[in-house]
Length: 383
Image 1 (cartoon, one colour):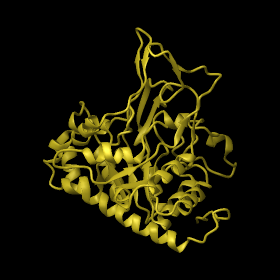
Image 2 (spheres, one colour):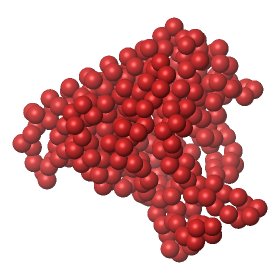
Image 3 (cartoon, helix red, strand yellow):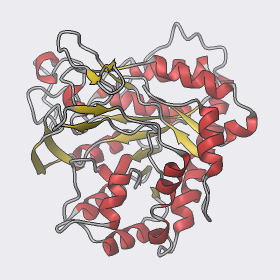
């Protein structure tokens, strides 16, 4: 929950980007998951040099679970609506404080839009299968709660899994988003990895893929604009040799879906691939072919991760990214993008088309439903 005011982001970061390709518009996705500070775990960070103690503020480290902090939507909606119209135009605000495994999530996004008209253009980034995060999500395991007549979803690889791409709640959520006009930003790893709570990689399982689940999901929610985050990659989910073929199959099967190459880790996979990963040239060919289906973004979270010196047992808390550091992140792929045939689409055109359309449609839905009672909303039924 560390961050900065939206006005500060616009004035000190966004408007100060240099170079030939400045940032003119940005999506804002508040982090919805709060790390519970469990007093019994006794996890705290002692900063001896400053004489202070801090609680968990990064999802890698503590054993305690993560929970959805719904108030985050109200916090940023209030800030957004206080901005000038010119500043509001530069930002596309997303709803994130919902649990996609809860059928009531569809009501949450409707209530957020109706309570703060003019604020939101999309939902997410929210996660289903994600390294470490999925294992820490608070909630009952699907194997413990499902009725005997309900089949176990094919993407449940562990008895402790609490999430699934086949959940009816996810279908209802994305259908509701599509009806309202909201863009959906979904994070789902391309394959399973096992990682300990403190960030130790145990195993990668490229054979346990989520490709079929993603394609099945898109078949159930046709018409909703969905951006699949990072082509399914992550800190530990590294691209395999056939990664781009898998991504291509998903995009081909899902005409309403897009993907992004945001996040510095993903960009490292593109610019400096390890042996066994797709080459930079293969990425170039992929991006030229799917130039109208891919978006770019910095995916900066403003605060860096905590730094640990295990020899001295000293800890340095994550620090606020400087505007110059943000600017460097924004332009780290400029040289590579200059070799693409459609870099303008990647940087600007695709984003503008998707979010401008969403903004117009959501504002129209808000006007049409302005008198709806947020205390008495029906949950959409899917068949």
